[in-house]
Amino acid sequence: MAEQKPAPAAGGRASMKKELPERFRNHKHVWVFIEQERGHVHPVSWELMGAGRILADKLKVELAGVIIGPPGEATLAAAQEAACYGADLVYTVTNPVFADYRNDPYTKALTEAVETFKPEILLLGATTLGRDLAGSVATTLATGLTADCTALDVDPDGSLAATRPTFGGSLLCTIYTLNFRPQMATIRPRVMPMPERVERPLGRLVEHPLAMAEEDIVTKVLKFIPDRDQAKSNLAYADVVVAGGLGLGSPENFQLVTQLASVLGAEYGCSRPLVQKGWQPAERQIGQTGKTIRPKLYIAAGISGAIQHRVGVEGADLIVAINTDKNAPIFDFAHIGVVTDALHLLPQLTEAFRHRLSAHIRDRIAS
Image 1 (cartoon, one colour):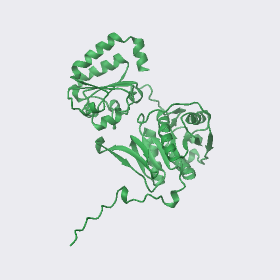
Image 2 (cartoon, rainbow, N blue to C red):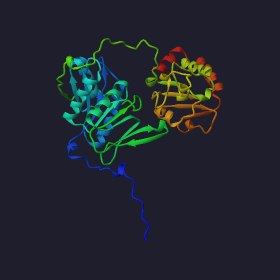
Image 3 (cartoon, rainbow, N blue to C red):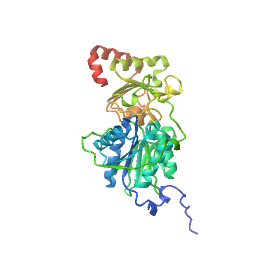
Image 4 (tube, rainbow, N blue to C red):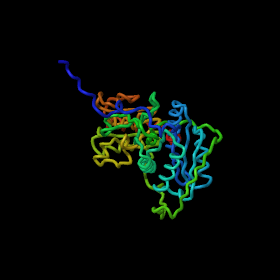
């Protein structure tokens, strides 16, 4: 009697149909949501334009920016800037109700635009605003959304391959939205490189009207309170970053990191265990569940370099790792590795830089 082979497990990508349902076959082009608030465009939007350009070229389709905002010069300026970062065309939805972000009107605006013009891929920044908007739009459209992606690609069959960490950052998985459109993904700031800005005229500008009045919106904006005066870090966009991990031994020793950062005119950060122990605030955490950084120089002291941390720093131009464990994972991706005690090396580096760097040079490094 022949041995019977077990049936293949149900589910998984292999068991799904790669052929789109008829109603989705006319979805084309790659869209990037251009996030702006009070006339200021978040830099992640331009980073996504670079990633979107690569995807659009592979699919041989157009790259479009989509802007939701109040009528006026700021929205038009954002559209012009989108062209300089590679947009073939820009869709705008303007209405006075978009002066401040509120989920209901923004969701209605973006959902209507998608249903009207039918993109196949929609990318948003994984900012506070972008995460809120992406989730509600994906739910309204009944499509898939892959959050906090670290890499994007297109399969030979045209499906978006969105990669993100999972299981607490210990693994990377690639997620597909095969049978629904648009394929949506959010990408954190500084995960993608900033594309080169090229001065060019705005091409096609498509205006999509939205019939909505203030009376139709339940949520009201009572007051706008800026947080620019608060002492928050600017890790994501710093050119030089010094960070410390558990190898420092105690919270008191973290001052060695801040002292070196001060001499270099740099920002300082830490690994996740230091936040979990209460040694540093969450805004200083670097990694997949913290800040993603792309500095010119990153100095990591006493950080083992687990995948959760690696995802947040591997875009740095130069990574210098200091650790007593020669087998620490961080040495697998650091450009320069120093096997020594950070408690001894950091003070020496600080003194060396203090004597060699003038204030003018430190300012130039930081800028």
